[in-house]
Length: 321
Length: 312
Image 1 (cartoon, rainbow over the protein chains, first blue to last red):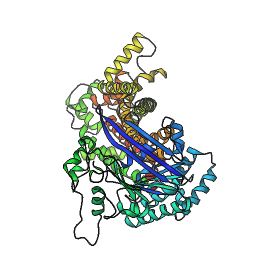
Image 2: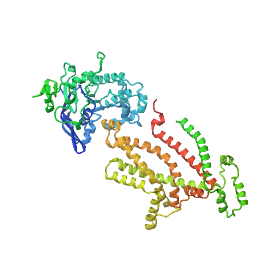
Image 3: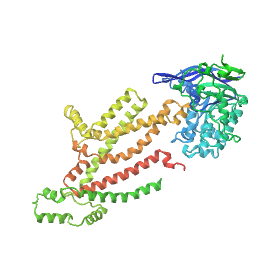
Image 4: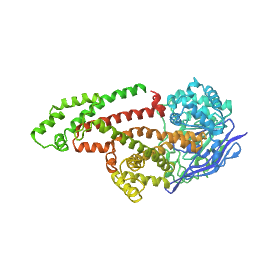
């Protein structure tokens, strides 16, 4: 079993106004070769910061980062900026959520390919072009030759999202981080993007870290799911167990309940909104919104309990002493 | 784009007609009339006979609409009339003055581009740094100090005390330095702000994040993506500011005794020299129209979104 990505006990704190706020607490994730891990949670729970910290992209003057991240068996050295840079886009690629504004408007699609290539390898124009055409064809883009000479504003959102995946696959990365790749494209394209990612995952054995608030999308692609709330991974479980019967944490069950469903008359939601870092006190951060709260939850230390192999939860109901 | 430019070129005609008509009427609203100044300028006595004669000669006895039409008819064949106060024709007076002012404006352009790039980058590269504070002080100074104060201040230092630059006139290249700097300063301040805000904004943009995650070196991200995108609006505005430079020389030219349009028009207005004022306004209006079109063309060259049209 080779583990590609192993994050253990990651802690992130941000400094703001001379105060420190915990953004991510004791997060651990491990991803095997060719596996898809889904991170799910509402906006503002720390999903994006999580992957940015793995890639060493947070400004160290504002952030304190603790913990260990191993990639492909080697611990990533976050003090070596040039080593980090050579990992980004080559060994670990990222696709972002807003393809329409993620491309530089005054550069062509080919320029973007070329720039990515130049960042990691010495390749001639023709080599880059050949590789780009190959990738675009693989992602079912019609007339790839024309597309290369287009500017981003001439492409549709779905097309740009696929181009983004194509650029990400340039150097056959071992890990692909997908940050909400289905959020800003319409329903039919969402399916398309998901099936393409699945294809890449099975064909190229590319590990995928799929970050999303779209439960359905995560469920359909991930092998393991990490549920994040207020910077804690409150539950992690195999995707096969993600159901109202299999999941344990009240937040996970709340998320499952708030899925739109044609059999229900009304959409059930989790009351309230995610807690802000500056509102945090001790105990469980989900306390206020929890349906099964109990006065002791406010003193809970949020430690992790392994209920089954591969299924962990941070909840007083399952781990309180 | 071609269609757009042709349309803009055609639009110049009605623009000029409206501008000249309005200015024609406005000039005639000025208190004290041209006949008086004409008489004084030509050392004639202010008798009823003389007044009638001059009025008749200058065509001022005709009804206003007719006066305008006569002016327009002559202007169409590039005859803008004779100055009331000198023996020269309007073209003979405005031509050389326009050249000097244009030279001054182009020289100012060098200051503007150079200083804007230098100081804009200095401040935007690291907001909050010492360089940034210096540039902000410079900007505040540039906005607060009127150009005539700055002009006399510079003359005092560089011409009177250090004696390294000539005081006034236009006899050598060194003469350009001070007036063009004074003329440029306000524009420089404006563009620095634009570049600084643009860069700070561009840095937060998703394509910078995307370039980072692709492993593009920080330096390249800044020098190509951030810089080019924040320069787009600057280049666009730069074209328009040529017009403003040419039309905005009145104070600077008077401070430095520069033989340009600014000084010419001041004198013409004071002496109610109608033909010169009319000619000047026509010229400035034309300059504004042309620089607008030029900057549109230039923007289209550097920005594909304008060149190829945003997708509908």
